[in-house]
Structures are given as structure tokens and as C-alpha cells.
Amino acid sequence: MPEWTSTKELDTVRSNLFCMKKMKIHQHWIFRKLGKPAPKIFIIGFNKCGTKTINRFFRRNGILSAHHGYHHFLRRTSYNIAARMKKNLEARLPILSDMSRYEAFSDLIHLTDKEVIEANEYFKELHSEYPDAYFIFNDRPVDAWIKSRLNHEGGPGGSFKGRYRSFTGMTEAEVTALWKQQYETQKAAVLDYFSGNDRFIYFDITRDGPEELSEALSDDYKLNPAKWSHRGSAAERQKRFGKK
Image 1 (cartoon, one colour):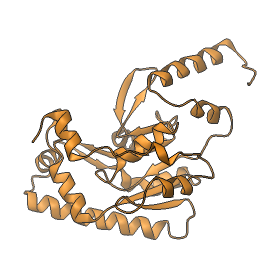
Image 2: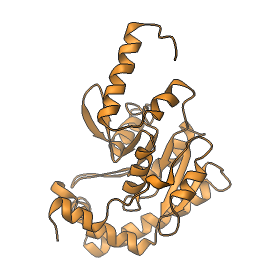
Image 3: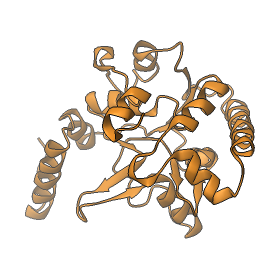
């Protein structure tokens, strides 16, 4: 164990350990923090492409992973990842300011009836600040992805397509055409930018599984494929929100 230079440092570690225990974060995280920090992991595909499943897999394996939002331990408040990234860039702050303690980031979208932020588009900015990070493009057939977005009820905030249509003023057909264009543009840009980069991971959620993900991250993270389980299905959302 390290020699703490002050009682304040020890109290901080104790406080973080207590918070992580409440969040059911594995003790391996604190051991990585006591040594050399592990590279960040950014999921730069879209929501509705297995992000909940990947996030849960990471968390079960002791990775401090933020999905859609992140929790600030001291303020005891949660914030949206995409909105914070945009705010940081506009203020010319490091892109992960206020949330750099986290190791993995997924579901990088902020959607209301007044604003849409697809922060997976910030992959170049993220790579510039974190050149040793892992970047995962989680892919699926685009038509299946669009259908999943259309079926996403969204809980108390209203349906995903409803909020998107309210913000854009578009018809459903226009929104789906826009989504398809965005998906294809993002995929092409990511594959071109990271061509030949050994830290880039292409992950097809219809074909690949935890074994491929574990192997790709094995230089820095020891993951147990048995801790994989699916999250975010339509049936699960119906159970949570009572939607049919």
C-alpha cells in the first residue's frame, strides 16, 4: 500500500471507496488508480447499438464506466455526458473536465425537445486529448438501428422519435432519412480516421461477443466474458415503463 502524504488524501480515498461500494464498482478499479492509469475507452457508435450491454459488461468487470450520464461523487448529482462534452469544448476546457475519473464512456447522446447532441461525433477531439485510448465502433445493420430508435419509448421524458421530431420539426420519414445519413456518415468517417490504428475496435453487435471485446482490451483490462448479459431490449423497456 502507498504511504499517504496527508490525512486529507486518506479521507478522500475512503470516501471514494464508500461511493464505489454503493455503486457496486469492483475493487480492481482502485488498484488500477493506485498504479498507472489504464487507457480510456470510448464507445463511438450510436445509442441503440448495444451500449447498455457493453456498459454493464464493463462495470461487472470493475471498469468505472459512465453510460449516458455520470455521477459526481462530491455534488451527489448526475449529469449528461454529451452535454458536458459540448459545454467543455465551447469553454475550451479539456473534453472530459468534471468526469475524467471515469474509464469508459458510452451512449454519448443528449436529446430533449429543444436540443440534440450526438457526442460520438467528437471522436477526433477525444483522440487528440487521449491518443492512447481505445475507441470502439459498435455497429449493427442501419435499418435495424433505425427501427430500434423508433421503438424507444424513452421513459418519463417521452419517446425518442417524439423528442427528435419536436426539436427538428421533421416528419417521421424525414427523421429516419436523417438518421440513416448520420449513421452512414459517422461510420465512414470513423473507419477512415482510425484505419490502421491498433487501439481501434470494430464491434458488430450482431456477430461479435464478449470474447472478442475481452481479447481486444486484454493489454490493459482483464475481462471475464462470463459476465456478459444483454441489456436494453424492447421487452425490458416495456417492463420498466409499462409500454406496449
